[in-house]
Length: 88
Image 1: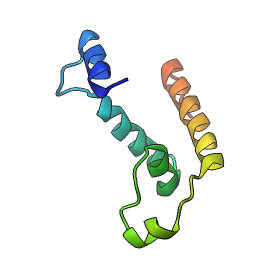
Image 2: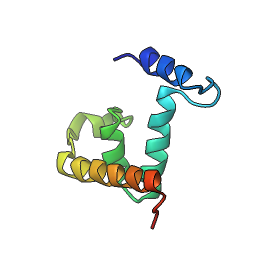
Image 3: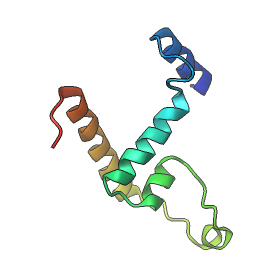
Image 4: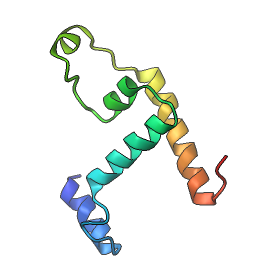
């Protein structure tokens, strides 16, 4: 599914381009996950961002799958709390 498809769906829901984009969800998730205390390496790998440090990228090929699974469950739990209005 392309980003344009998601953006069209957002427009159909009444969100203006300046208000929200599909990519904006990625930025929002990154910000909130950092605020929740998740490690940057895990967040960046989940967002499929490559390592910017060339030396680190050459040697570190970690996928962080167990941590990413935990993080995504925590993200789903956070979204459920937002939906129900029960934030702790």
